[in-house]
Length: 187
Length: 191
Image (cartoon, rainbow over all chains, first blue to last red; front, side, top):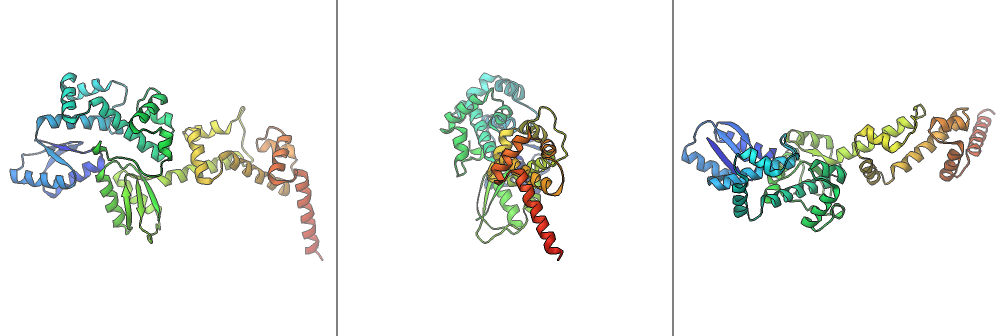
């Protein structure tokens, strides 16, 4: 049985969920971003308890088919941007999503927009900009290396997009003293 | 108030994991946000390595760590290249050589170095070479031409001019100064 969980974005999220599953003695086959495969179906009481503990750590159990799909799309984008998986920015986002979800792009893009209030493309841009912010703060890579890593066609493209979203140029952002990063699940 | 910078934090779960881990080794935190931890006044970091080891299994790493390592790497390379026994390829540019060796963009290496050391890499190299020249002048009988060749100067004139701007002496005067000193100290030693 599959459970769909909202707001998972990184390996620590997976660890936290695994910990909770272990604590409540729910046997699982597989955990990945946004998805848990259980060995057997839990009793309703157990499931409710699991749902509550998830809520405490900022996750949410999804029942609705549509919100699940939206969450899946988000997870694919996050893994892509964060470089968790094997995928790279060599294909169009729409092609990657279609291939992974085995659904028509037109269908899930309208669904995503209506549920989230932003388009998939805009969401992907926001995720990428957040990653750029993270990498800028580490101060380890130059802007051109960052733009290559995140699949931008040029540094100019990245700078322009960055300025459009944050209102600052990347170098202005670097000079800011305070921390302006957002958690990935709040984007 | 001491700050630690941590790489790899992206969400609230990361924050709570880091918080838990740091508190478990007895550190008190004032504030914690994505990638940045502020320790409370009075808490001192005894061992940065310990913190790094504690966070490693969770996929985090310390940022200062990496930058500090980069600076030491650069210094080591400078010591190798301008240590006197380096075979300078032709044409030789320090910036291309070092960015190849460290597999990083030179702009980036140079800005990290300047920020941490309050001195550019070029200035560091100049100072390093001048100290080397002094060493050679005083302890070895080598000519200036030999020294210039060993340290990768394009000409003796270049070496002399740089030596003079940095130390205020020209090389031969410096040498005579030192030998005078040595003779004086010998005289004192032998009554």
